[in-house]
Each structure stands twice: as C-alpha cells, then as structure tokens.
Image (cartoon, rainbow, N blue to C red; front, side, top):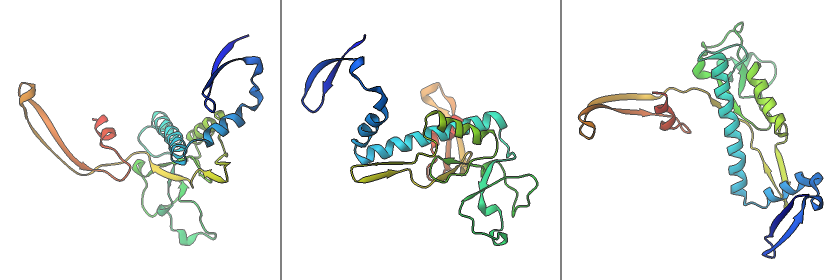
Length: 206
C-alpha cells in the first residue's frame, strides 16, 4: 500500500492518505472539475495548445509519408471548385482532392490544408485522416468538443484549416562581411509572411 502526502488548498492543511482511500473510478469527473476551476483564458490556451500539437504532428506525418507533393485524398480549399454547379449548399470550407476531378486551377502542395481539431471538421481521405482520428481516439477526445460547468460552456470553436506549407513573399536578400566573425560572409533576409506564420520556422528550413 502506497502512502501519499496531500495538500488541501481550501484549508492549507497537509494530511496523509493512501491509494485505497482514493476513488479512481471517478477520476474523469475530478479532472473535469479541476480543469473548469481554471480561468477561461487558461482553459482556452490549453485547448488551443492541444489543437496545435495535433496539427503539427499531422503535418510532420503528412510530409514524412507523402513528401512535398499533393496526393489523392488531401484537403484543399473549396475555392478550387465552381460551387454554382453543386445541387446542395456546401457547408464545408474544403474539398477532397482527386486526380480525376476538374478544378478551376491546378492545386499544388501549397494549397493543401489540415484541420485544427474541432466540431464538424473534415479529415483527409488518406492515411493522415486515420492518423488524426486515431490520435484523438487514443486521448478519448474524438467528437468530444464541449465542456460545461459553472453555468457556462467552453466549446472548441468551429474547425479552422491551415495550409501545411507556405511560401514567403516579397523576398529579398543581401550579403556582407561580418566583422564579428573574422569578416566571414553573412546574409540578410527580408520577407513577408501571412498572419499566424513565423519567421523562426521559415529560417529553420534554410
């Protein structure tokens, strides 16, 4: 039997307990109450961090498996199709890429998107879709987008899609001698990125 020392935050009292006194069958409810006790901004940050972690893992897996080219089953923006030809309204922002389809313009790897996990998300119809689904199922979060408590809801906002690769624009560069490095050559880069894209990630690829 394992003894533990616990600290009661409500009374500032330290006490001993044992595992046999802890009701582990109710651990999910305990964790939920603890999570809901956090300020809303921290809960939102935690959910965003989870979404971003999964998205980054999925992108890495996508590039590892299929490389830097568009493949069957990838997701692309719906703007590549003439939506006036659809008989029903298209609620989704994306469509599944197929080599046999005709598009307004030819999609490429820079048009491929992946979802930030959320309510109503579309998944790629290839192994990356299964990768995302299995990750969520392993964490028991697949389809569980709503957390209620204290008279309010914390809802995983409607799904958003991010491009997996991006190209910087307005790129210029210059070279010069760096006196701090024995006059070795250095390069100065200037470029612009879209909102949510970071220069640190772009420079890492050099």
